[in-house]
Image (cartoon, rainbow, N blue to C red; front, side, top):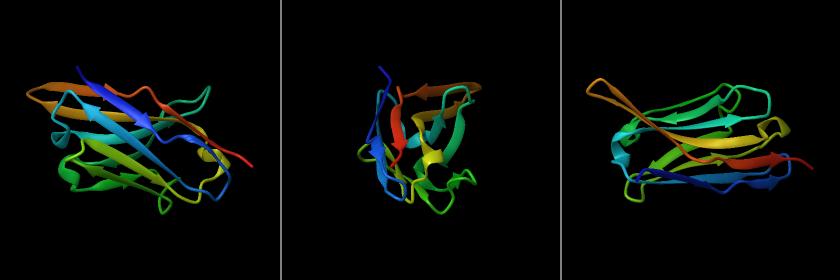
Length: 120
């Protein structure tokens, strides 16, 4: 059974930091591209950060470059999102996603999301 379980969200003041974690199980984690998305009410889900399988490369949305860092630990089957210098506009539900394309099929898994609120 595939599971992605996010944790680490919460309330933080502007300028603060949070570290999100996403623990994966039920699939070969190391071979999947891992992504963090976020969504606020009434808006489409936004891609925040991506890390390739085996950690070879990373990419970020312009809005978070220089502030957020995505990383993965393939021994712990966990992907992280370190968020620094948080702004009120970072407030959203953050979702973890695992993606792989193999033999003509998409394998696409989602977590349940974790709320991040940036407010004074």
